[in-house]
Length: 404
Image 1: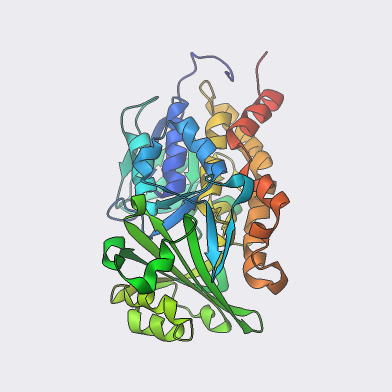
Image 2: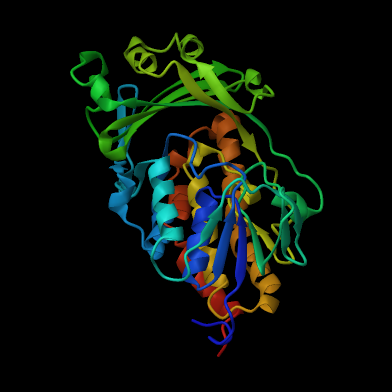
C-alpha cells in the first residue's frame, strides 16, 4: 500500500508523552518509515501503576507491531470468581492477558527504540511542552527549544496540554466519583496459607467482591495475578460522593485502606493486610466528549482524546488501537501536505468507537443499572473485543486515500 511515491521523504513526527499511547504511536509511525521523537515531561521513562488487562483487540495491534508475548510475562484470563460464584469469559476465553503495566511498557519501549523496521524513535526526558503551534507544527519546550515537525501527536493523557492547542481552549478532566487504590503482593508471601487459597483455586483469572452501599455508591476489591503468576495485583475501587476530593494522585496509608474495607468478608482481609505500608492512590478522571481531535498538523490519541475508565478494561487498548490506525493512515509516502486530510480521516475512523467506550466506561461506573453491563452483554463484548483496528484502518485507507 502506498499513498503517493516512495521517493517522498519520511515525515518528522513529534509525540508528546511516553506512556503506552505515545510509545505505541512511535512504533506504528517508525514502521511506516517516519522519523519520530518523543518528548516526555518526567525525568525518567517509567510507567506508574500495577497491572492491566490486555484484551484481544489490543493484541491484534501488538501483533502488527511484532511484539513478543513472552516479554509480557502474562497470565491467561480465563474467567472470574465473584465471592463463591465462578464464571468464564465464554467464547473469549484466554483472549485477555493479565499483564504488569511496566512489562507492557518495557516491550513497547523496545519496539519503539530498538532494532526493527524503520528508524528507531528517540525519547527526550525532562522535556515539558509549553507551547504548541498546530498549523506550523512546532512545539516549544520549557528550556526554550523549538521543535519543528510535520505531525504533532498529543499522547499526553487525561491532563493533555496538546488538547488545549487543538481545541483552542482548555477542556479539563473532571472527577468521576471513583477513587482507586493499587498495590502488588509477591505471591510467594501467600504460599501455604489456608486463608488465601481462594486466590489460586478454580479458574485462572480475577477474583472480586463488590459491596453496594446505596445511593449509587459501591466498593470493590479486584485481584488477579500478573508477571507470570509471581505477583498479585490488588485493586480497590470506591465510588462515593467522598471520591470528589481535590487530591488527584498520591498515596494512602494501608491502615486507612483496611478501615475502608473492614466490613468485607474476613477471607479478603489477609490480602489487604499484605499490602505495603503506603498504597498508590488516585482519582479516576473523566474527559468530556470533545468537538474535535485534530487541528492542522496536530492530533490527539488515547486518553487525551477520549479518557476511558477501567470498567471495560479498554483504556490502554483504545490508545494502542488509535496508534495502530494512525500508522496505517500516515503510511510511507505520506507528504506533509497530505497530513491534515489524513489526520481528519483518522478522526473520522476512530471517533465513534473512542467516544462510545469513553461514555460507556463512565456510565457503567456511575449508573447503577448499567454496572458491569459490559461483562454481561455478549453483543457489546463482541463489538469491542473482536474489532481489528489495523484491518479497519487499511480498509478506510483503500476507500479514501489509495492511489490507483
